[in-house]
Image (cartoon, rainbow, N blue to C red; front, side, top):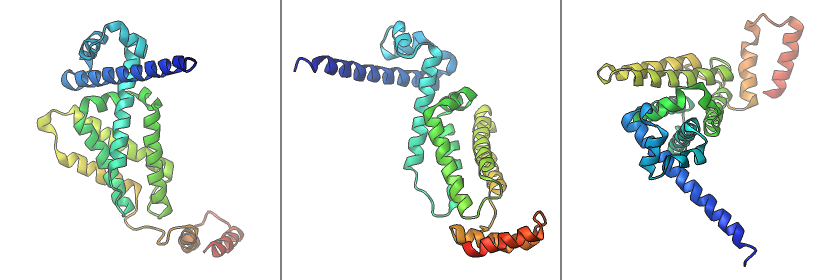
Amino acid sequence: MQSGAPEETATGEAAGREVTRQRVVEAAIGLLEREGREAVTTRAVAAAAGLQPPAIYRLFGDKEGLLDAVAEHGFHAFLATKHGAPEPEDPVEGLRAGWDLAVEFAVDNPALYALMYGEPSRAASAAFRTGMRMLKERVHRLALGGWLRVDEDLAVQIIHATARGAALTWLSLPEEARNPALLSILRDAMTNAVTDPEPAVRDTGPAGAARALRAALPEQTVLSGAERRLLREWLDRLS
């Protein structure tokens, strides 16, 4: 029993430290949303969390470390909304719904969103990378269905940039100047830039893709005649 006591003590201390970190992060978010980023000082956050200022430095290193933790909390909260949202059967509708979800999170959490996405350095967040991986998976499903108008990497960049730009632009406007049509028009522009009105591949999988490519093959001039014949043979096998 005695040999395990130090381990139990260390575990208890780690758990207590994590609870305190979470309390500080929540206090910082409260100040951020109520009074803006300038109000998030180590002294003010410590007071709101019921701690002395040196505790902030022990837990987060410095103010930037605290802000990084707040941003990470925001990314995790955003991921939770993604996991909780139902996935439409139509992949294009799923793309539009995911874009709307990102913008709605910004509208509901303006100061937190500005902290998360207003600085490129926040992209190092593990939760941010998880969100981008989910976006890439969504885009890959569109590609498999023959919906993409551009390549997958460019599609990911367009989707992310338009949602982020739309949200930050919306938040920068005075409330009386915020026209909901701005967001719907930008979402439609993103959809039109990334996807085709009808899928190029009717059947998912390599066979459907091979048939679609084979149908378009005679119209292209990049390949030589011998290359086209060889590619056609390969596509025939796949389809």
